[in-house]
Image (cartoon, rainbow, N blue to C red; front, side, top):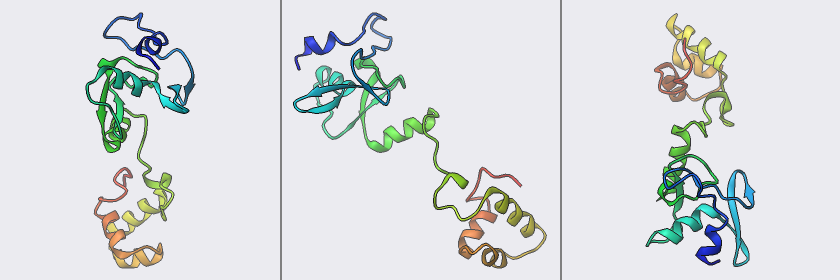
Length: 152
């Protein structure tokens, strides 16, 4: 795809500092382009067309948090981890904690109960056995290092 034809599908009417949305095909909110026999994210093409270094295996991150945006001023190269971190701090992706974690063996109610029992003198070892979890895990729960979001 030539640069001229690519940019003809980007709405730049908002000016140089506003988001420039991709006006063609979308999937999960992101602009897509059929290029050389495969779908390519439009914002990646925008990045590659305007930066001396191609994104390659890197992720192209949006500083504007608007998936169809192709404004090169809003795009930067980064790692997968940085991209996930962006999503978490912007509230688009919350970590699977507590009961939402598919591997959780306890519920918030059980964690609250265990902490109340521990405050009454019941040992962490006994509580761990009761809930069929490792004693070190129960210790971390009682110390507030695990299940931090659960109050008393």
